[in-house]
Image (cartoon, rainbow, N blue to C red; front, top):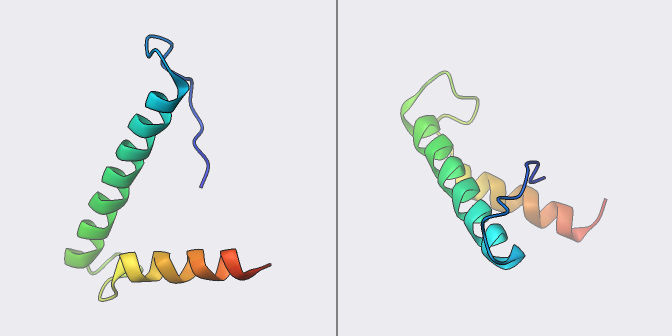
Length: 64
């Protein structure tokens, strides 16, 4: 994943920015997973979206 946005310069540290951005991305992902759980139009409907993500991530970590 890529975090692509301007940094909020009112934050005192880059670490806090990364923490906040990560929390927001995780919330968005969980919202997507919840939507897929209840929406037949989602390509991942009927699957555990978090498990699918974990599997894709593991394969990426393992190599090309």
